[in-house]
Length: 416
Image (cartoon, rainbow, N blue to C red; front, side):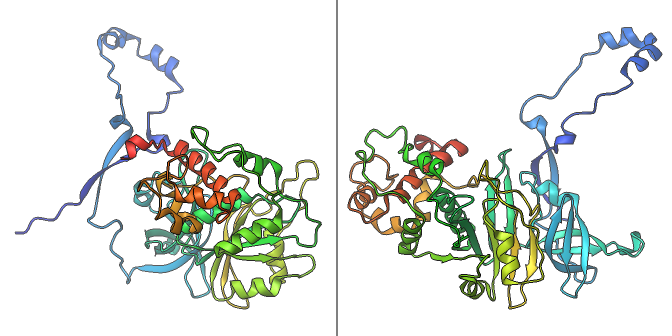
């Protein structure tokens, strides 16, 4: 008789509410009720688990990363929205199911903020008979993702904003709030990392240009790699404007649009870019993402709000990501505005490959492991000094290098 093949044993972290037993609220009452056992209690040795292993548990999983699909019992669908613990899944037949996620999936992906996100292709079991006719289910399997937009959240976990999109529309504005070039550069790196085609869209072209956010520029012009022995010798550079930023990005090969939801300028070009694709819209709060969607497809009636005159920051009118169908073809994922975007799992030593203009020069660097900071014979720095690579983009690279190195605990000696 053949022996049943066992699954793999893996160690996973306890969930936060499973780390320790809850404190008994009736401790005093229980003490008086069991006063006769006090002597026995005093002779007992209290043994508490300590160390990293005590915060982990062992589970057994199959040979694959997910259970085999049972097409007779399970249904297939796409996640169109996530509200807390409930995922709304479109089954492709005009029905949307409210689904929870099987515990084993949450356990396997415990380091993530959520194991399921908008855009995921999932298999789920029908639990309608248990819910008085409502369309409810349980997500049993998540298909492998072909693309993601992820960032690091405040707790250091992966926050996957959307999965399986084709392109990322990075939305900024001419004014109210001011353009943040370094934030755009972060999004560009995240798009390359997540296998998304990036498109830059600067909205509110009807407003008078107010330049770029001075704090954003100062943040990386002062961070010319703090521990570099030989930074660029106090380089002189022209004032950074919205136009100069777009010219730099177009020169690198990125598609850049200028739009106005108020006047309709650039909307035809935007529709052309969106048609036939799944596009995720992301950017600062208040740049007009929802206004753009209302303009290109009247009838959506997405909530919008004005930017604060005091702080020049937008308000969150979109509170969760959602997948929307476009009448002219394609889908968009409207996401909440952000004020910070920390990169997820970007190795500082590999950051160079996410800057297209670095690819050719870096082949000629004297050292193979050149980080393009203060190394001798660096061809990238030489290209910057010769004006072949934008100084602003190079400084943005240096700041991102410092941020990712600090966020991941990376050290050059350990990486070798």
